[in-house]
Length: 339
Image (cartoon, rainbow, N blue to C red):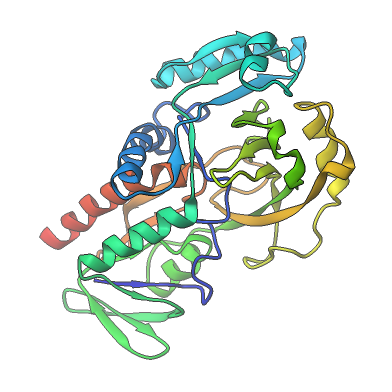
C-alpha cells in the first residue's frame, strides 16, 4: 500500500490544525455520518490512545448559556444530543460550572463527560508508525498529477512515477475535489474555510482547566469561539469560520486580535486584551457553500470511477471520528477488491 500526500507540506493541514478536541456527538442530525462516526469513533480513539501512548484525557466539556435568554436553546441542544444517543449529559447551573471552572461565569451549561482532548500531532505520528509496521509506504511531498484507467484499476501518476492500484482512496482533504477530477471521479467542490485562533498568554493558562464552548453558531459553520486547554497546557480561543478562496491561505488578512476579546469575555469576564496573543490557524474542507448550513462527510464508492472510494469533506468531528472513518473506508475498499 502506498499513501500519497496531495500537498507538498505534510502535516500542515486539517489533521493537526485544529483544537485537538475529542467530541461526543452533540450537534449534528442523528442519522448523519458526522454523528454516528463521532460517537463510535470517540471510544475507538480513547482506546487507541491508551494502547499507543498518545497524550490525551477525557476531561469533559461544558457547552454554556452565557445568559438566561440562552437557556432554552441550551435545553433544546441537550434534548437533541440525548436523542442522538450521546451518553451522560447533564444540565448544571452557573455554580456547577464554577466548581470545575472557577473563572468561568455563565448562566447554565450542558456537562458532557465523554468529551476530551488529544495531542493531534502525537496521534498522527502513532498512526504513521502503525501504518509503516504494516508495510504501508508513505510518500510525502508526492502530489498526484493524474491517472489512467487500466485493466482492474487505476494507474496513478505522480511527478516521479506511476503507481498501479486496484483501488484508490481519495482522502486528500482540501484538495479532494481536485484529486477526484484527476482520477475521473465525481465532480464536487471543497470550500476552504479558515479558522483562526488566539491564545491566552502563558501566565494566564491557569484560568481554564478544560473545555468551555458557547452555543453553536446559527450559521452551522462552526461551534463558535470556544476555550480549549490543550493537553500541553496552552489555552486556545477560537476558531472562527471564514470562507476563503485559496486552499493554502492560512495567514493573509487575519482578523484583529481585538475581535476575540468580547467572545472570550462572555466566558471569562476578567480577560483583557493584554492577556491575548495571536495563535495559529487552520482550514476546514467544507462541502457546502456559505448559504447552506450543513453537509455530511462524503464516504462512499464513487459513482463514476469503479476503482475509487471517496473520503471527502472530513472536517470536524473528523479527528474524533478518524478511526471509524478508516474502518468504513476499509469496508468499501474490500467491496471494490471483491467486485
